[in-house]
Image (cartoon, rainbow, N blue to C red; front, side, top):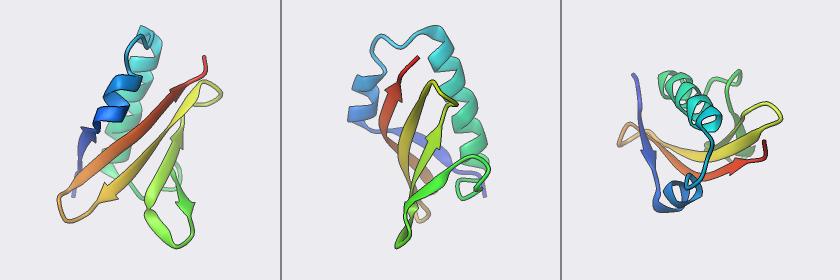
Length: 84
């Protein structure tokens, strides 16, 4: 099953002013994550008791926090942080 990305309002506001490099990294990361949101190669659970609440890093450049909504087939992105 392939999931669809969903950027919550907070994540959309955090995208304001992101450089092109960050948007490119975000798009590539979302494509990988939507193909396998529980793949430990691309993301990790933020808490042991909630495996659907996850985080993915963009190397040393930033990270995103998201939740996998299995029922809706969505990857809901809540937080984007760009440090680069």
